[in-house]
Image 1 (cartoon, one colour):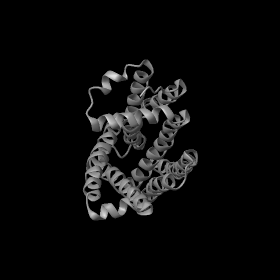
Image 2 (tube, rainbow, N blue to C red):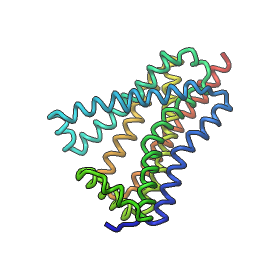
Image 3 (cartoon, rainbow, N blue to C red):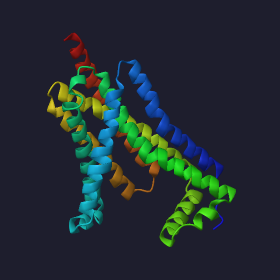
Image 4 (cartoon, one colour):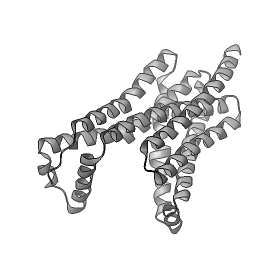
Amino acid sequence: MNLTVPNLTIVCMIVSCVIAFGLPILLALYFHKKKGEFIPMIVGIAVMFVFVFTLEAAVNQTIFKSAIGETIRNNKILYAVYGGLMAAVFEECGRWIAYRTILKNRIGNDSNALMYGVGHGGCEAIMIVGFMMLNYITISIMMNKGTIGETLSQLDSATLAKMQLAMQTLSTTPSYVFLLSGVERISALMAQVSLSVLVWFAVKFKHKKYFFLALLFHFVMDAGTVLLRSQIDSIILVEVFIFVVAAMIVFVAYNVWCHFHTTSIKK
């Protein structure tokens, strides 16, 4: 299999990788200048690992091994609803619990909501896109240099088949698709920071409606994304949907921030 990856594709991967790693760092430094603390950011990272990559993943694995899971998997609407609901419940409940426990003594500093959001969303960006792009870049360079053969010779048949499929995908997928992965992380990080703000003020001022609003927004974004990807071929339209929903969340969170942050200062 003598496949190569276009240089433009590799450039797009690099850009997405830089976004995934760099944007969270830049935002963390910026919010830190606004009096945000690094502890909430670390807590956000921990919550992502515990509630999403561990607990949610374990529940999903259990459910999809059952007959119910098979039914969900074979129905696009059910699959989208299930995915959106699980993501919303685990992530927003993780925020709620973290704010009520570990961060309860830091709830007076509203900038910590932003730092938490950067940790939560930044971890997601790095784990989902950052490391994936690093892996793709490495494979692409090896393919173009003709040194991938030695690696392939050391793989078992099952892994080899997966690697060959990945190589085929890297070679034939339009370059802009890899760039959109980074663009999507911008929208997702906007949403994650804003959702963190909504839950923050829900906990701080005991306004549970903002918690349920965060649940709703999160569900709509994730379920809508899964459903659209299963129904339409245009990845650009999917990314437009994600951006529009993220912008709505930012707008609502900004207005909530302006109202409650001013109130907290006056107090």
